[in-house]
Length: 230
Image (tube, rainbow, N blue to C red; front, side):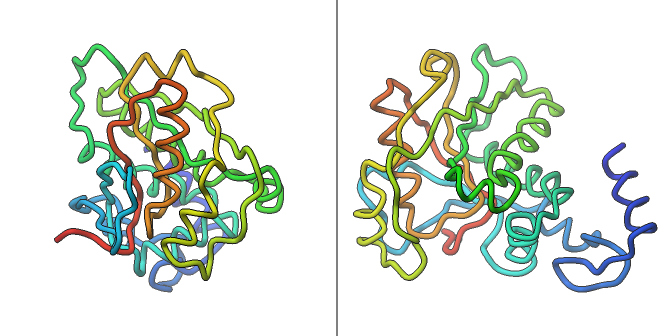
């Protein structure tokens, strides 16, 4: 509630247009917010699932308003949007692994890493920020949850845009490593989280790196997917 009140106050002081639909005097209107935070998550279905891809659940299909909200948060530094995006991600996490407040082991959300260069250029790490917002939402619902930023890039990769599914797999193979929290990864239920899934190549590579470190990845969860299983 305090975040909602702050959002409302800032919207009055700094008039804006909804990033999702353009309605005036609000950063994210109630309708667009509801499309994110009250969605019914579905399984993601890449056109050609790569080998090693775990089950992935997405809160929404990648299209407006989700697309505009994700871009505003990631590329334009609209940091307050991390809260509704985190609520959406929390829905996908609950669909991927229906945890209960009484479970003994916590959920461990491992966000896909950004490169140091990308984080500096953007001024923040959007996936980590959304993962933390999702963990907060889950803890608020009584589900023990931690964010474990265990992954980092082991080598440079080419820009993924414009690459087909096979090329993305080759580009990412061996690109990630677990650099920290190896012991912690064995203390809970591990899920890889990201903002968007298209071909699934990134989540496959994250799953490989985590498995080599001794972690058992149960599933993936994302805010949006380009293709969903209706």
